[in-house]
Image (tube, rainbow, N blue to C red; front, side):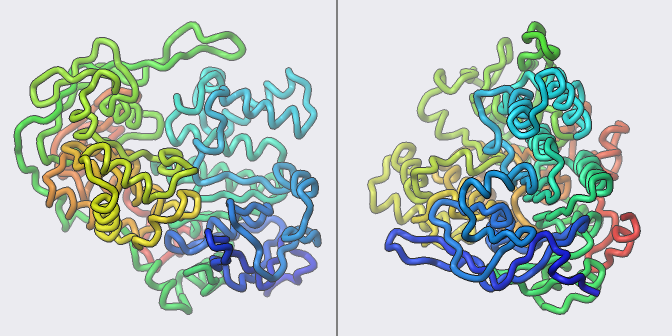
Length: 551
């Protein structure tokens, strides 16, 4: 039985939202959204990429992206209308009453400020704690989110943390003021399954202890089944179904919901991973070591924390190599070193048997073209003042020498190959969904016609159905072009589908490598075995009873 709206902390009534285009016309993105959120409950927003989940979630704090407008209806927090609220009213609500953990943790953090100082700033400005009390609270928050050695991590800058560590820092900052409503937008997409479980336990524990309500935006229905009481299903900006999790997932009333429930990418022993196809060696890495500055709070950094230790591997022409490991194991750091964005002193990099300069500045224009990278955070990799089409066309002009018209035609073809609407080339990055941003980044990387593509968590922002489509498209593009790929991911089902060979990283060291089927079916280390166990879904889609019982 539904509670009366008078008991709700959030009430949306026929809410509409849209974006203003270059001709001052409003393109609707949210249509007649009506729902309520009650104290202490957890409500999940699910739907495919571009369905409007994140736009609706941001609206709960009165946020609208550039050009965004409320087109109708009402949105109230404890009776206070948010669609017409003054900026000073919204500032009092944000952070203190309603806090948000965004999908993109790197964009949520100030790049030139240590992460510990950023949490301290929240505590000092919003809670009035004195410096000593704020410092203790900051360290306790970091420890509570599962960060090891919080004193050392507090001294690091955002780019020196893994995606999972950055996400946990943002969660710590959101919890700092004990809000009554916490909005989490894809909070676990950057996390491996072991860490995801810890974060979800943390969120559930926080909700139980504080009595705060929770809105969880995700494309992983298992996460919703584990954490949420009710679920709201969105498609093309409309709510197509909402209700208790057990009812909606076990007996969906909409065919679209059934499609989401049935879609999943799993490690299926009956379907073997791709067969290795030996080729000439393209890239070899010998004895790679790398360290970020370290230290202990509140002292300055005086030591170095190893991020990678004696890493040696090779990638053959046209080969797809997977790199797996928990958050913070060094996966993304390895990718950035191979791409030349970080420099490892003393490391030997060989490209087609010849020495490869460790930094971008030392590499030739041809080497820069032949090694491309797709980042875990696609939004931060685009110029926010430049349309997606301009970004792709610039790559085509710089790397291939194409003129304006051929570059535009080629950009449209790449978009179509990845299942994107060529009309979206005229949009700015922030006006695309997380999944659309990621596919745009992949299109830009392929625009250079690389020989090696380094993919860092390329599917983390995608729902299950779109993820499967993207990987099929990526396989076709890779096979057609014979492009070697280094796939960095915490999703082992992606490795099973894409990579014939895999490398396992733990605390910056390779502890196991070999054929994917052999490593996954007969792991030689307890660590690898734990990753495999966590990767297997606890229940099949369409039967969420086990997850519901766990709550």
